[in-house]
Image (cartoon, rainbow, N blue to C red):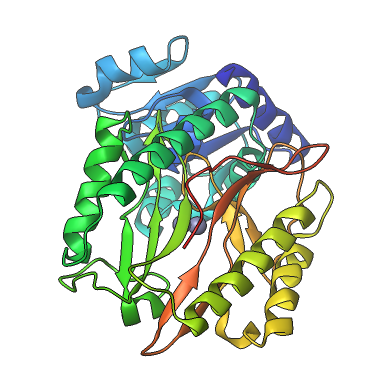
Length: 350
Ligand code: ZN
Ligand code: ZN
């Protein structure tokens, strides 16, 4: 499977008239070869993982059949291979190579034209194959299961930090390698910060609590958000929760193959405008999820991406009110030839 992915990169290199590519983004190296350690990858007529002695065994296990060099600096070994392959034009990943490393590359490859490339491999990664979708679904189900247990046992008085730790514990016991990102548990006014970090504040009766969490399974991530209410629901809390839920459902329906990501974002924004909350929806609607929790495509007002079958994206509208709190609801959705398929199934009620 990984060799097919390398083939696709090679076909792209041929189109660009490049003799080789230096891949320095770790998730891209992992996607292309299976190797999850630190290092770089040279794709030329063959492929060479450039790592160090710490990863000699791991690279053979994770990337059988891919040549590996583990006898020196990552970049130095890559330069030696690139010089030896005789390519006149060598591409590098401009978003993922430091200036210092670019300088070393230029010094080591005198006479070779270095061509800055964008995020071609990330673009390829946006469309998942069936094996990848299965892993994301597994990650989602581990996260769902843990959340169900966590919610059933949740008692007022616990701090956000402790609650987040408990959810993490349940995910790991349930089969996650780790959380796919730092879990957000934001109670009361803290919910107004979309990326709040769990702190000492306790979860109290009357609080809306935004919980954003995900599991990682074999490198693949899930991502999901629910907003809970502790105790009796106030009118404003319910109205906003329902407006966000409606915006989300409308956007999920719109997430079909061929749809412009900006148009899907607009569906949610339009729904919230109808309820008078559009200005409080301060971020994009969603993002792709895979080996990274944030990857392509981007669902936002300015996005130029278009949905294609096999993409896995989040749909996560939210309303945030300073000093009051927030409501965000997030599902993970697989874009298919037919209707979008929701991959997250955590309980939904307030
Ligand atoms: Zn999330
Ligand atoms: Zn997300």
